[in-house]
Image (tube, rainbow, N blue to C red; front, top):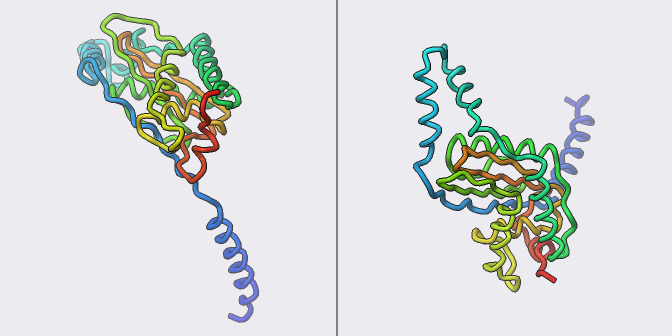
Length: 227
């Protein structure tokens, strides 16, 4: 055992230093705003109808073909085009300027991740956050008649929570978490995804670095009053 005492001591010393560093490094507590409840037809109604029609198609040989048929129906295609993304980004930056926060840039990686989750929400017909490490805002709308959604509408909806935010008592609150993420000063990149079936629309915004960090001093530093 004597032969190994030197290396063992060395490894213990390295481990001890690493442990101290990890202990001293503050852990960021990310909080995501609570999604608002859905309104409109029962969850999954349109999707289940289309799946049943696909299932009855005698030319479909297996479930993969049934699902593929549903995915190729035009109403299930995403509508997050370049125009929507620009409106979404411009709306963020216009609001951020009011709060002395630097402008965001659009991230291809975040757009891809946000689009995947928007598609998932449409398939599930429910509002819930993904497991992403990034910040995330969700928006839902339903209309009995097809309506084109603009990128600004979702951002306006989130920012309007400012009316309930108390700048004299900064911190995370479930009814203002979308607003605080929009203007969070340390956030640098944003991505957006949209999924719709013609009546139901889901918009997902993802942010890096994430906002809504509840550690002491973070809200005071990152959510500033409008000038």
